[in-house]
Amino acid sequence: MEGASVAVKDPSERIGYLIWQISQAYTQRFERALRPLGLTQAQFSTLVRLSLDGPLSSAELARRCGVTAQSMGTALRDLVERGLVERRPHPTHGKIIEICVTAAGKALAQQGETALEPCEQETLEPFLPQEQEQVRSHLRRMLGALNAQALGPGNGSQHDGRE
Image 1: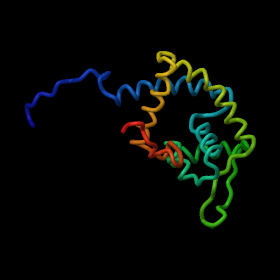
Image 2: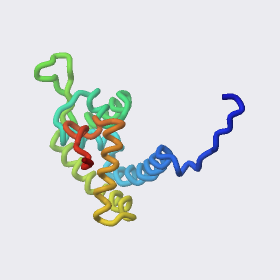
Image 3: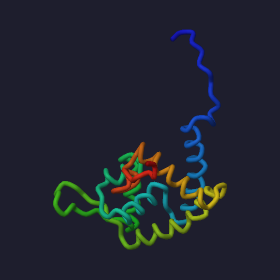
Image 4: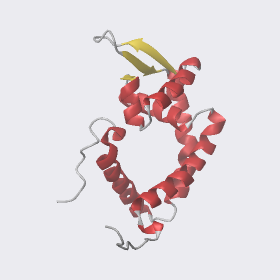
């Protein structure tokens, strides 16, 4: 449509812009909190997913953590070198290599959870306590619509409370 005029919207009216800005601000705090533990966001997510979900292939881990296969490979390389995860042959599928979290990896994931608690509190501070769970619920619903695998097994199709 040549010559058609499209009104320019204030970016703060676009959900993508808001999510991106929140993500940038939160990621900075997240990475700063994990830095003393020597973890990146992808590495922390890997340790948490494996702690919660059990052994997974590298490809499945990448999907659940919302990163590329290449980024997951980089994250895993360091985690393996540090003895936080192990690669093992899948018990029934000979060509699949599973990634398993070690006891040290689980312990570091727990330390990461503790380190991130102030980030959570700061992010949710503008909301009343009863609103905080609503915020989480709305964000889970959005994520479920865009990347349900990131919610882990059985969480992608949760009832959203609407009738």
